[in-house]
Image (tube, rainbow, N blue to C red; front, side, top):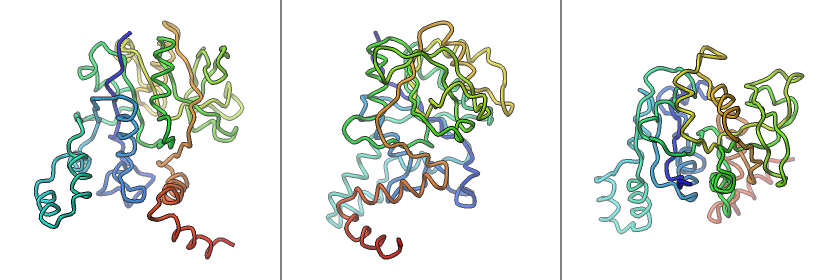
Length: 289
């Protein structure tokens, strides 16, 4: 079985839910405390054993490329002023092995993944969506999925149970249990079903390990909901051809593409910071009644 060393991060969306902030700044660069959202995603990938990352970007996403590039002037300034800790942080960011390709048309997540075909080749690979940040400092979410793939040999969908009223916002899995209470055999999937038509409350939440056969299927997938090529449609076909699993991952997941989820991430990540938590908790106590 091939090791999973490559990951794809789709980042070509326009971020309309965060306008006007995203008019000039990519939504993936909006910070959680002092770090761009996409950097949390990349750090999860690296902590999970990924060595090569492809970001699917768009015409307005140069800031992402600049962030992960070397910054000689900044590094020189930090070195001259003896700011060794900041210098190392900036150099570490610039040394991450990241590749970029542009999705030239907004044709959906399935099309974005298809843009990675040449980069991936015939290997299993990971997909991490930038709207989903998962906190688990001991066992990264993607590492959990990779471990399930290594045990089963099938594609793995990172899932959690959502409330009934939220099922229409996600791809929902129709599955059967296995001997492991967190692993389910996928029978089918429904993209954003009506609340009364959802086969379960097990939602796919932005993490995947996928076998390379998905590209052959995506090559022939017709546009679905919204006129876009849906990854869910291709995964449904793949699940009929080979074993696929839904994994109920362990971790606190934040939907940072939603204002409420983004604000929750800001507060909770701040409270995890030793340098900020004390004073920030005191501040919160003065405004929470």
